[in-house]
Amino acid sequence: MLDSLNLETVENIQKLLVERKIYSTRAAKELFLNNRYQRIAADGSNRIFLRIQPADFPDCIIIIPAGNSPSDLAESRSAWKIGRHLEHSGVPVPKLYCWHPETGVLVFEDLGDKRLHDITRHSTPGAACKGRSVFSFYQETIENLAKMQIRGGTGFQQEWCWDTPRYDLALMVEKESHYFLRAFWHGFLGIETVPGIEGEFRDIAKRAGDAPGDYFLHRDFQCRNIMIKDNAVRFIDFQGGRLGPLGYDIASLLIDPYSGLSMQMQEQLLAEYIESVGNYLSVDKELFVQQFNLLAVQRNLQIIGAFSYLSQIKEKPFFKDYIRPALFSLHVRLKGKIFNEYTSLKTMVHFGLREMEKM
Image (cartoon, rainbow, N blue to C red; front, top):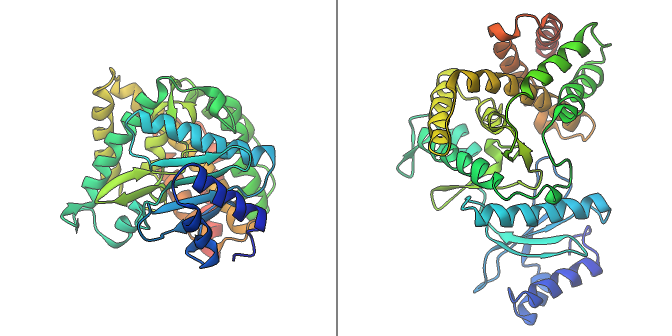
């Protein structure tokens, strides 16, 4: 038995599987007696993921909270409540089998190991993967993203959120631009604050916050959270969802340093995304692109901060390799005319790139 699973946890899992009629009593006991499970590595999460594959029963993933704090249990509740809402909205998420409110244990459909990231890493955009190009997987992704954001925003209950109920100015400043400042600039590079940067951060956030924000926002919509099962896309890791603007999630997908999409492909996919959104509501393309660019900067700052924190504080070296690509993406984005006045941020990004080259 895994040393991270105590007897009480095992018994709770067995009881849940039996009560919800997923497994028989005998099958549930055999899962742990015969080690018929496998721990799956998680990216930035501290939760425990177990793959269960007994014969004649559904393939399942059991998700165990990192602890039993109110925050841990609230995150689990969000995964269940938001997942059920998205499932009922026709969004391609895993089947949600059951949830135990007292312990936070979740049982979801096992979607396998293939992610959109795996396809982008091993293929060129036009290369075939079981008869499909990488581009076609992205097309399917953005069509379903538009559906998730608009249908998922309808009837969404803010009480389901375990972090914050909305993507707003306070979140943009504290958990994105200041995250960049704390984790990357101060923590990773060890440099003091650049004069004028606080005002620039607040101004960018205020302008980004002008975008309408009553849509479902995944907030970590990138290629490692998009699974491929039966040659179709499925979305995971939606427990951090809340209400927010349309442009943020598509920005997350397109500037994702894991995939390293070319600017040409980003532009093509953005155009297709705007067309997909147009199937649901009217879009002012010029205004949307401006809001998209502002939100892309916000997301880029968050990515750099998160990767710096995870690689340095959490000691997960996997993330370090993606800091420089994320910085370069931000450097390119800031060349746009709408960012002409943000000289302090441009100086910081340029300096950060030079420092990363020395490492």
